[in-house]
Amino acid sequence: MFTTIKEVITYCEQNSIRMIDFKMIDLNGRWRHITIPAARLDDKIMQYGIGFDGSNYGYAPVEKSDMVFIPELGSAHLEPFTDTPTLTMIGNVCVIGAQENRPFDQYPRNVAIRAEQFMREKGFADRMIIGPEFEFHLLDHISYECKPHKVAYTLDAMQAEWNSGLHGERQNLGYHVPANDGYHAAPPHDTTFSFRNKVCMLLEEWGVNVKYHHHEVGGTCQLEFEVELGDIVEMADQTMIIKYVIKNAAIANHKTATFMPKPIFNEAGNGMHVHMLLMKDGKPLFYDAKGYSGLSEQAH
Image (cartoon, rainbow, N blue to C red; front, side):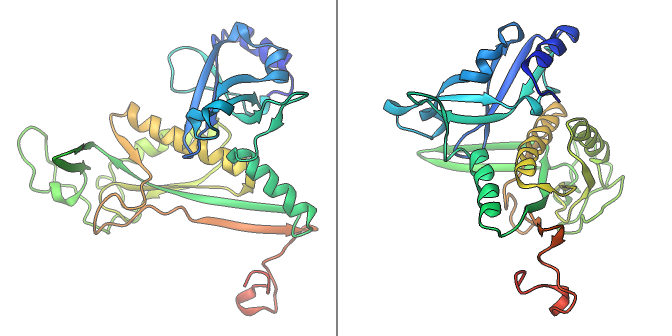
């Protein structure tokens, strides 16, 4: 979106942006964030970064926890889930050095960047192109307890077949999806069509090219988004964006999205299939017209 800090500042002034939000990944793969007033954005942030305590991210012991976040201007996007006009960015984490800051080796985004560099340096391939599929459950209720004398949890989705006999406070219209029979379910059984359309539009606005979305196998409101292929670092960034948008759009609709692998017994679990393509000199390395099933030895 931007290439210079001056462009960002001009955009903020012209569009009444009040806050700048920076998103970072912790050791568990979750986004955390820190926010500054837009008026505080200047060249020093790009040069020296924003300091934070890396020990609370799981990256370092307390006595060596000083780290800095360097935003990537090209990732800037309007934050869709706040009332205050806010520009949000992702970026990289660096370790503070005596002479200059250096990239933190264990930061997930830096790992992806180094992996891509290693692939090219060793001559394995020029590009690694991937396309994940994102499966998740959209739930209407979650409660859990973990106490010294009691452990329990309850999940519910109104369209699940176990609610077919429901009567009382909530209206039951009789359209429920049987267990493991939800693949490509259509309305009125598919109650999330409008929700997925809204998520799709939010993702497209953020620069994520959605291939398609649909109801998945799980009758307890299991859904899927698949996106177009992209380079590994780009898709790693988009993976974080996609999960962020889905979870926050769910909350805005008084629901909860979970990407847990197996949230419900005897129902289809949530996978994350990743389509992968290695390219070298413009040719796909996994393809061989004479190979078994059209696959090269490298693919096997």
